[in-house]
Image (cartoon, rainbow, N blue to C red; front, side, top):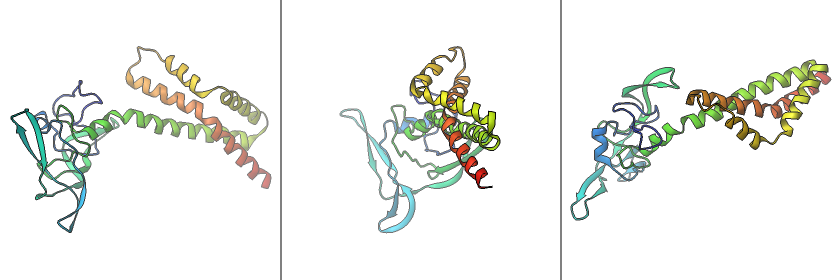
Length: 231
């Protein structure tokens, strides 16, 4: 179970984290058994025999002298990982597509903490992936939009030429003459503070798309001009 990028704001019990992995500590009751657990390494061979991707389980004991949890690796019971498995909780991919399939899961009643757990016993890798979703999709969506804008305006300028080519080139020259970093900061600061996180996300994505298309547009224009001259 992973919630947000901060352990100080846990999600409601039973909520799902990502479609990537099911870690084995998906409820608060189970998470209490794996507080600050070390990471589990993925192995392929057990006692000289190829088993496939698996992890060794933990054996936890409480040191009564210092009240510290101590974890020992149990190398007698390899736990083979499952791929494209079904989970108990459903999720919505990008908030649109419902599903309950994970990319990788530990065996039933097993654990898989590739980066260990935090002070609340929650898997760190799932929390990092959950918190990085918006940052990662901003880049992907922004590049996709700038790619479409560059193809459209560059194709128009290279195919029609004349006044269309002239004005497209002037616009690209103006945009390329402005330093990108200060412009990004200014436009990001201009977003209203009353906007919801979703609107801010779309606003930043649109800003990235509007500023990155001139280079691709010039490349597409030059290619179309060379092809037109060949005919």
